[in-house]
Structure formats: C-alpha cells, structure tokens
Image 1 (cartoon, one colour):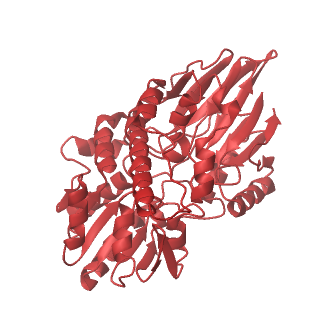
Image 2 (cartoon, rainbow, N blue to C red; image 1 turned 120 degrees about the vertical axis):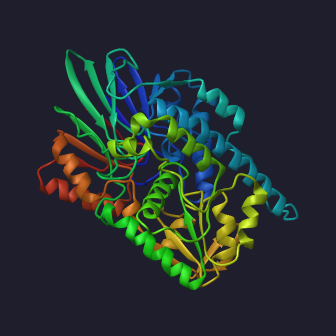
Image 3 (tube, helix red, strand yellow; image 1 turned 180 degrees about the vertical axis):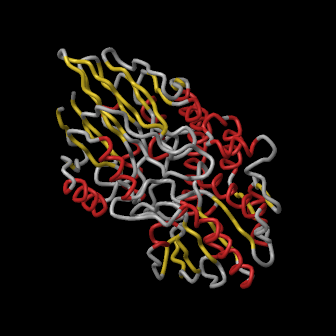
Amino acid sequence: MKLTFLGAAGEVTGSMLLVETDGGSILVDCGMFQGRRAEARERNRTLPQAAIAADAVILTHAHIDHAGSLPVLVRSGFAGSIHTTPATRDLCALMLRDVAYLQVADAEYLNRRHADDPTWEPITPIYDEEDVVVALRHLVGQPYQRSFEPVPGVTATLIEAGHILGSAQVVLDIRERGGRHRLLVSGDLGRAGLPIIRDPAPPPPDVDTLVMESTYGGRRHGPVAAMAGELSALLAEARDRRGKVIVPSFALGRTQELLHVLHGLEHAGHPARMPIFIDSPLAIDVTSVFRLHAECFDAETRRLLEHDDPFAVRGLTMTRTREASMAIRDVEGSALIIAASGMCEGGRVLHHLRNLVEDPSTTIVVVGFMAQHTLGRRLVERRPQVKIWGLDRDLRARVVVLDGFSAHADTDDLEAYARRAAARATFLVHGEPEGQRALAEALSTGGLAVHIPARGETVER
C-alpha cells in the first residue's frame, strides 16, 4: 500500500489523500484549497493527475475544503464512484451548486469592477453548475457501519466522525500479498457534547496506520457547556451599544448549531431580544436537509424533534433574495446577522463587513477556524486594516472569538484519539505547521511513531 498526500499536508484546506493498493487506487476527499486568491485559483483549477486517475473516491464530509473540487475531478476525467454517507450526498448537492454560483457571481463582479483597468486579467469560474450536475451523478450513498468494496481487495466502512451532519471516519481493510492492513483516516473529528449530532465514534481496534487531522493541534477549546452563556452575554452587550453583531458562519454545521443554541437560550428565558437574520440561501436549504436526516442526530435532539423545532427562534428572518439581504443595513439598532462564508472569502458576509467593519459599535463574532491568508484570519489577528473586495478598510469593529463553538476536536481530543488508535504509524494532516509540531511532540512523547508529511510526499506501508 502507498499513501500520497496530495493536499492538506502542512496546511488546513484542500484535503486529498491517495491510497494505492494492489486492487486499485482510492482518493479520500477532494477538497478546495483556500488561501491567497491567485494560488487558490491555480491549485483548484488543475488537480494532480494521480487524483484524476483514481478508481474510486471516498468522501468524509461535505465541507468545501474536503469536497469542493469534485466537479473539477470529474470534468478532468475521473470516471469512478464517489462513496459517502447519504446525508453528505444530499448536502453536496447544495454545497457544490453554491460554490459554482459564487464563483460565477464573484467573477462577474470583479471583471465588471476592473473593466477599465488595462492590466486586469479577466477571471473565469473554476467550474459552473453544469459541472456540478455531472459530478453529482457519481455520488453513491453508503450508510454508517455498512461495509462496501470500493476497489477489489479493499473493504471500506464509514463510522461517525461527529464533526457535521453526515461526517465520517474512513476505515479501510486492505488485503494484499497474503496479509491485511487496516488504515484509518479520521476526516475532521468533532467534539463530545456538541449539539445536534452524535459524538465521534472511537477508533476501531487493530489500526495499523492512522491519517489524522490536526487542525487544533497545540490548542484547547473552551468548554461546550459555556458557549450558550458566552453568546448570551455578548448579545446583551450589543443591545446596550445598539450595535450590530456579525457572525461569519459556515452554512453547513455552524449556522444550525447557532440556531440550536439560540433556541435553547430562548426556552431558558434568555432570548436574543433583537432581530436575527440568517443571510444565506445555502444555510436555509442546508437546515432543511438537517430535518431530513434525524438518523444523524443525538438522542437529545431526536427527543426535542418529537414536540419542537430545534432550529426555530423568535425574531428570525431568513433572507433569500439579494434585495432582502441589502435591506438588513437599514435595520436600526442592534441585530444579529449570521452570514456565509465561514472564512470571509466570499458570500454575503463580505457585504456586511464592508458596511460595518469601520463602526466601533459593531461586534464580529468568530465561531470557527480561520485558515491562513483568509480575511477571517486577518480579522482574528485584528489587523489595523483589512482588504475587502480590493479596498482597504479600517478595522474599528470589536472582534470576539468564541472557540467553544468549534466543531473540531482540540489537542486533548486528538491526543486521546490517537493514543486509543495506537497505530504503528500516525500521519498528521489538515493542520498548520506550528500546531502539527506541538501535537507530534506530545504523541511522540507518549511512544507513538508520528510523521508530518509534505504535500506530494509518498510513503509505503
């Protein structure tokens, strides 16, 4: 067996792992790289030939940094099946169409804005909706805990990852040369106690090789139980200042968690007491998909569904049209605006940031990981100026990070998971170098053999 780390090696986005066996090759995830615009366009437009030539794909979940390049893969010649959970299959139908739409809209906007600049090179979308439609025909739903054979000699099983709806760890039992090798790919791991979805399943026994995410290596989250109170206190402060609260939020996962927490606060006697906007057509549609997949929910949420809607909140407005989105800026006093995208690299949140980032009464609430070289990371770093659509804006708004909302395992969770897996070799992917080094050191001290691969590196097991 050979592993080639085609993406998310020494970086957080663009997950792509090639597994080559005697029976064929499997690509685990095919994600978009997010970072500097020019580099991202180049890497996402042209995928490695080894990925295109794979016999099958297994997809861990529907986030764009894991699934966003599937239309490019299929358009480039991939002809096999893309295996994933039924919930992820349904979510991909929404997520990939949204990416295609945003690429077309952003290209039109930027090309129109720079039409009089003779040095401007027109931008073309990496893929469009027709590419998405073709790619979706390759998706095959595979329930949790039900084994299937993606290529001859390999048995695959998807188990709960607890990260977002439908997320999975991938267990590959590889039979070759008279022996058996068990490869475990963690995907993105969640945290115990997160609302709505089930906790991550423990790693299976007898793991030979572990490929594990390391997004929060070296860092610890605040407790899940504290996040409702932190959000309630922040909203109370915003009401006192009559300021707007902007939450750049992933349409998938984080938005639904926020709605669930706001619902809980309301029923506990602590409502937001301000208009709430979900300004993302994608988040609205994703919430509908959540309601279709209660099999992914934890027991508490399933019980709640028997008599209540966990995503219903008083004062909530869901804005689909551009006109309704633009009208939010005319709302007087405080308001909570939850808008995509999560890393502030596109979507409607940019409009709200452009309008409010220079207003000291505004609070920007960060509830997820912000990759390097994104606008979201520059906000977290509280840069004096941030660039929005090519123009510098003074950052006068308050920036608050609520990491209790993170859907990623932190360093304690990752260490416990890797030690329980007790693999003969552990490879850390999907993380930034500093955090990976801290996590590798902690695991090595505990006696595990740990390696941090470089992008493009191949290892034999």
